Length: 482
Image 1 (cartoon, one colour):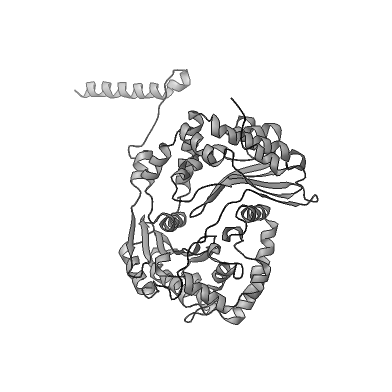
Image 2 (tube, rainbow, N blue to C red):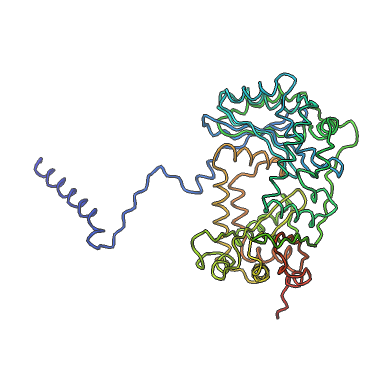
């Protein structure tokens, strides 16, 4: 019996040895080792922790995603940004964000900074056109301290006169730094011409004269008008217990007002205007140009198809590999003909409108050719985009969607933003199903609706002499074909 077992074992060893040698002897055999624990893509998106939501009596919402890691990100997403300002106080939301870290009734600026550093935490904030965000990254055990600090800086900031005067200079220097970022400059010009005369047309930082004149009363008025319970979401992701955070929210934010003493602020309507703005400077080495049509708001069902179309155009930089073999036709043409140094397609959404377009950087003498190729590609999206291209774009969009949710901070950002934009967090399986429902016909129909024969907004900075006349750009927004 032992001899037979030894023979069998020896045979198995020989078979395994032959199998391992097979690739070296030219046999067409592929061995693929795969862990039985590896989850499929479908299993992965279904097993994402649920987003739990609860409401305080004053309307403030608490939303969490508990992934069980030892760190967490917690923050306040507030439905208030530069869009809620007027010409006189434009810049006050961003100014207020700066003042939040300059000391409160219970903590001096030094105490605040030391407390955050002693926890090993990070405290940050930013202002956009429709939202203001204050958030902290910390250990799971320090969540109560982080929530206490966040509640303190938005409810008890001193807004001292000396700190306000000091911060004016900081913001003015920040404005000078932004002026050196030409992409930011072009997008500000694009908003100014696309939404001219409206709140979305104004910059987030505001004009210099406003920064020099904003006072403590302006800041207090903005807080009293917009920092209300129903317009705030306390969102957290990582190692966070929902019941614990809901209790902390009730303790620290339960006293926030839910009502308005005067007139209830209404989101101002911002009309889109097809127009252009050119800032010609022939001393600059490269031209920076953006062209966009009016997109749709966050909740518009056409948004998913526009996201797929945006992914179809893609982005490219001459430092990338691939060259003429790039999957994006526009990237392949740019690489082969040297039309530009880089380009980036974008789909910027707001509550009720948006901008869908492309930003590129090129030499002075190739602007006209680049613009021609861009608009021809837009017309192709409206008329003859293929199922293969749409499938590729959908796969890339889903990949980007998951890559952007890597870490507690991006997840908390996604939770807070979606709670403000949609009133809920859209589950990943639902979002994937919406993307999968898009086909080539849907892309052609939606692109025809938003792009074909529409008046675009154009912004150019630098040596833009060769940028075609606006009427020529407008006439290229449709094809006369049988």
